[in-house]
Image: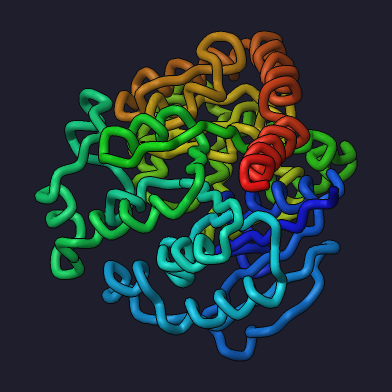
Length: 394
């Protein structure tokens, strides 16, 4: 039986090349490779971008939906720009399975209710904490004690004038339309549970390590172009954001450079050297001696960890969120508290001064990502859930 799958994704390549959108793309391609028929409904914020088209063999239906962020606490629940179009497309495509990702802005949670009306298995993947927060989870309680419980007062402080007192209640109600909720890490699963969201199963994101190979000539050209030849490179591949820990790594690097003068921080964000994609991003990883992922919030499953390990690089990762589930402390890198810049600097210096140790950790990370976080395993586990629920409905 060839399963017809409809993926609802608020952001998706080629418009969105961020970690979440790219992870959904990887799953879609993997399902297609496994013999499924895959359709994607996504959004654009420019009317001229609304169209149906093929991308990398996938049939994409891109619908226009846009509004000012101040209305997000309301329109993320029910967006009249999107729900009618989603209903029409579900009826037109007539999928066997509906799987929603990143619907917490333009598509809206009401799409889960619409999907359920068609009496097909409905899945929802949680990729952040937006099901119970108004942004990143970085409360003092979490940073000090890993307590992810969020109060209405926490949300009021975060949302301020955007606060909607019934938002979280309605999100939980909408989520009950999903036959199963997937979480991308155990850390996020626990946080969802602590905030009243149950029926959650952890399904780790996968990556195809073969996609991250690149020739040494390309690496040399990348380093020469950016004046990195002869340097000890520490690569930060996340967004330029305070909560991604850029300030923490800057402080740590000030200490590192006193001990390792050739050390430089390479940042691939929307400022500085510009956002890197494709072969340039691969070259950046392969150029690095170390990759740092120092988020200071519950970062559920930073894809940079997987990408670094696929490129055989040791990772110095945050102790918050899902990173410690990926990066094994002392085996594939280090998981440290990024608020302790001195400790982070010490770990960076250790690996820069002991390249054989760094190489050993990087190779161990490569073996781990191939074994535990490969795309085929991710697809197989997802497919097993689809088939199980389809069997129950027969």
